[in-house]
Image 1 (tube, rainbow over the protein chains, first blue to last red):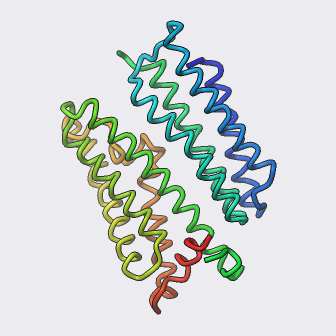
Image 2: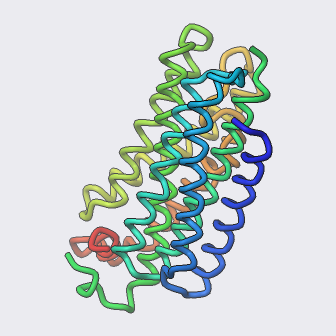
Image 3: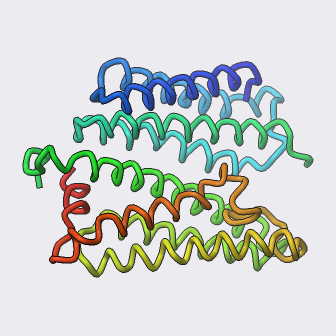
Length: 122
Length: 152
């Protein structure tokens, strides 16, 4: 895991989440903008997956448990897929809100993953 | 079972329900994932807390399903499971402060769900409010609001 990349990722997920929440509550249906923001969040998770697989090979190992880290990452990757399909099927403003909820949940999960990788004592 | 079959007038009320269902689903996913990890890797450290985590995870899954499936029976299941969650988060929340050696380990309900942004404390209240609000419509037979959630 790369410290600055993870910080960027949390910031992007929070921004995408707030954008979707605000636009959703304002009555907007899922759009290229809100779906696109969620796709960016998902792509960053895929980048994180690749980074976390390569990192231990170059000496950057997690301080916490790799299994716990993997469970968080795996669950996080599933969320935009689920919320995205929801948005494609249910063309209502609540689908946009749901995209926002998923993005914010991912922000929290990535923050937890950061703690597991860097801040665990042993 | 198509989106067009649900009249727009009901979209708002059932829409909030959809968000509730999604938040429950995410919480169920989080609780399941975490309790799976806790039981696999360190069950001996705190068997009581981790068993409770697993129980909580199962209840969240049942509650999520009960919120989605239409019908009066499932509405009762939803009330029962969500009520159980509220009781769980309150009781375990108090116990985790009073007897930390028993419940000090992180579980979804420890310290009133503070590890989960207090969502486990707030969500059952919102869930019960939503269920009681739609009760009059659901009492005649099939629950209208849930029907909309499912058809979406």
